[in-house]
Amino acid sequence: MRFSVTARWARRWWGSALAVGVVVSLAGCGGSNTTTGTPGSTAASRSGAGQPVAVLYAGSLVNLMEHNLGPKFDAATGYTFQGEGTGSSELANEIKGKTKRADVFISASPSADATLEGAANGNWLSWYATFATAPLVLGYNPHSRFAADLKSKPWPAVISEPGFRLGRTDPKLDPKGQLTVQALQQVGLGPMVDNASQVFPEQDLVGRLEAGQLDAGFFYSNEAVEQHIPTISLSPVDLSASYTVTVLNQPPDQAGAIAFVTYLLGDQGVTLLKQDGLTVLSPPKRSGPASAVPAQLHPTIG
Image (tube, rainbow, N blue to C red; front, top):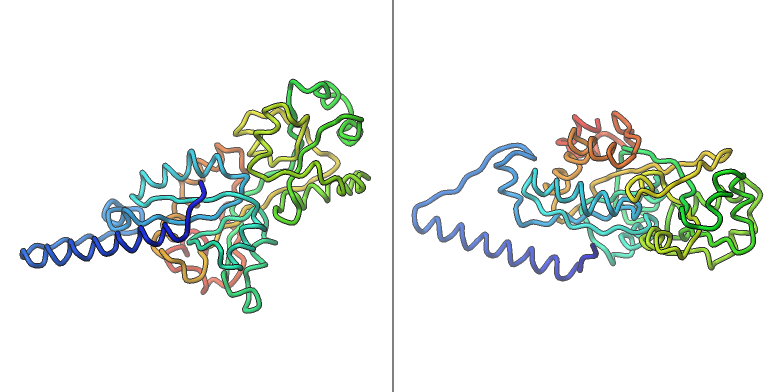
């Protein structure tokens, strides 16, 4: 789901104005409306209702975020999840370039987080937590004429055959694309990296494979699990996504951001992550000083 920054903040401004009007009206009538509670409680949920929590996340998590974790977060907390998924490096560049504004950033590699740290990069984040991993695999279309070969022959030999249609993501925009380049180089297929016809947007790769436009593509294992895509291991190559999460510095909705990360790393979120085929790190591995992490997240992140 893509969101318009301008429209989003306009809706939030009008929502705030309406809330002020209601409070003034109640005060004039001698009424009161007080809620207390901790993030995730019913009372806290009421206070967060109507305030979208903007989450920019790795495109390999689109199905999980939009159809599972996001809606269940909404139902559990009363907040409204508002997400956008595409290449992690691309999102980091947009955050740094101020073309995207968000509360939470979820990346598929710490390398994307590193581009947002420090004064030279705008001080967009001061910490992140690695919470899950997923190996890079080769997913294939079971109806491809190369399917039998992929199951019986070394994968580097098969994808090099004439007429094989391979899909991968752009290494300039997506950590998965960077890992794919490493995988190809490790098995002696470095020249294939220069074939730009193999490169597609991360959010399009699954659809192209399922439509029969590709014989195979490089995916993370959780993407394949979600879409029931058959896969083969890239052995002897052993590369994985490392999913990280952070609350961006000076987020528009600090409370909503904390509520989302609390849910993501809590029992309910972890269950959903595991169901999605991810290997969850418990506890998450923090990078950056503990003092930079919001106090409400210390029990989970430290």
